Length: 332
Ligand code: AQP
Image (cartoon, rainbow, N blue to C red):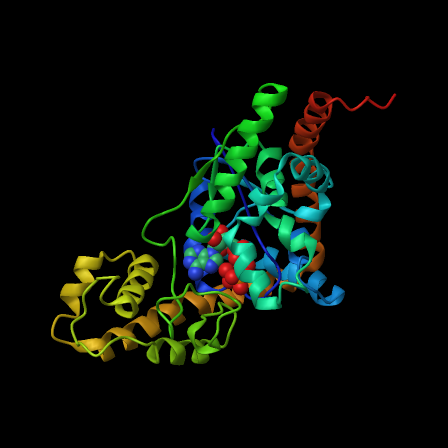
């Protein structure tokens, strides 16, 4: 079976609809066909200031949400990044292989550091993509299911894998991004030109999966559309409506053309009301399932411990081969 690897940050608490439709939903599908490794990336989460107690709680919460979304520990390896020390160890080697200018070209760093103020951004935020490179290469992943915003980081991963292989001999699998066109980028409901993100400019544009369903329904009904009235998928001319159609279609399985026909002559109000119900029908059981995993933290922790053990077996092998290739003297 080909291997996939991906991760999600525990920073925000609740996952948002962009995380789910852009990434996690694909993770669930891929566990059926691939040897799948998925992790909660807590090392990435400390690239911005964190509260220790919140980080611990959010790490469990992220794992609970992944299980609620449908990850099955019997079908995939689910673990917490900091439980596998090889991530930080390989990241150091990858840091030493990356050019300063090359790292400086990562657009996500530019965006995130601009938001924080360049002087305050940590060196960890700068090297974040290189830790991600290590995450992927440790598992010799063939594919990496992510949203469009991660494409540049996968490109960097490919470059560094090829560079290492060229310099020290064939060591790493060169991975491909796995990005589904339809859901590669879910947009902010209030600002449909911007990606939905936890640091969204408007909380009203962000659908958090764990919010009160009533709040969520209200946000969907209040989504920004346009002054036209025709329900048609046209991302350039009608970004708001097109985003709603994408969400609707992905959550229900209905085709876009089918939805256009269903709402022909009905206007945006009907579309938004129906979509608010679709979203509520999705988040309501999701919240309940998440809570039921949180109610039993011992089971959750032991499941993560088993995941880490499986992950370490793979990661340790890759790291020891890498150490040898680099020229580190083996410890006796
Ligand atoms: N709007 C989105 N559309 C599609 N995919 C998305 N992803 C995030 N937003 C969208 C994908 O979700 C996965 C996990 O993301 P992460 O853990 O890196 O979270 P993040 O990027 O910190 O989430 P945000 O909300 O995007 O945060 P900020 O505020 O930092 O911008 C990834 O595969 C990502 O592509």
